[in-house]
Image (cartoon, rainbow, N blue to C red; front, side):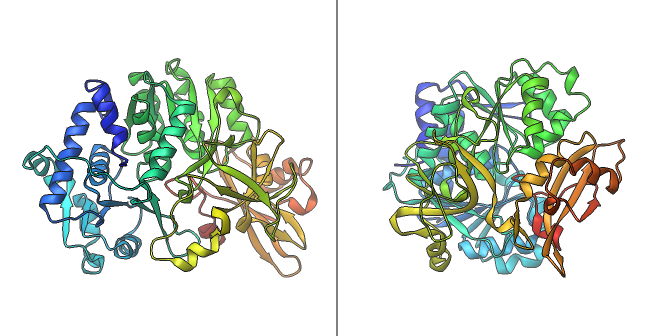
Length: 491
């Protein structure tokens, strides 16, 4: 078994079909298969052995795709690193993984100079200078390695927003199954999927690129997101589906030029990584005239465990269990709760990863007896198995004993016509312990006072849920996957 089979199988059946489109350059399945073969041979020629780890610190683009697929073919484990991290954060992740090579670009390599020795790698490959020549100079003809299903294929480190980053060990079976199961629900061979989520994030890489490869369709990837160029790209490539995160879709929805673009080819917008505000879903369906499909998961579950088609989506839900995933909602003592009750979501099935790299203590905390993974997310499920995210357990605000889930307040904030983005966090209070605080980014050209905002919220929220303070900010800080960086806001 090898993740690269997702590419190789499509290359065998559709060698001339466009597999990957990037900045005007189209790679057929046959060409992408050949180039990743060359990189696999390059790794072997350079003394990188099966089981070794290589760091891949790159923005989205063909070099990242070729490197990751080539590593899979060679049995080498790619550690795909968030390209937005600072040098010290990169050092922690690369050194922890024990990577022997690091693939990056000249700009990032220069930034890593102060921590270069501490990275521990024996070779750095600059893809913008030497990658093309490296591929040309390497003999092809390598055979894709075959591994047991539970062999570690890839390391993807958690964001580290709540502490030290942990390397999630995804097996060949984890990735293959997640890509195929997602494709079965959503993609066909004639689809052109614009992947706006970054490829160093599992949502963009596994469910985006590898998912559309599993369906033998076409992936269009972008180096980085900007609303107007992406809207133009949808029109130019006639994208049929779009994969992103709520922050991206929010920016595009409010882009002044959207109404002037011909987006009729677009059928479905996919989102994950954070809950989509109800107001945005309505805008997609009524203003964009496209279907909306929300998925849910975490890196630890490869990453998607709930999804459904746009036609079957239910308001406020992120779908139902995908593939052989089994879900249950439990209380604080691990007891299964009845349908409709609110508790922590646990998952079991092929999607559950092998745990955290060299972290048996952290693994034991959330990968528990019976093959269950504790997600840490608070949810409820309906009688048909549809999951409704309430919030992250760690983000819940305890206001004098009353539970306040930030998402409840954020949903109401997003209804205000002047608000472009908003996040609610816990602020310390000498009497109540914690109270809600709202960080709000306004749309360009709008004004809003704190008093006006609270007056808007008051009819829809219980008094204890009302923000005790509001801070207006230019932008909400978010990770590359679109998750609000609440820790930074709390600080």
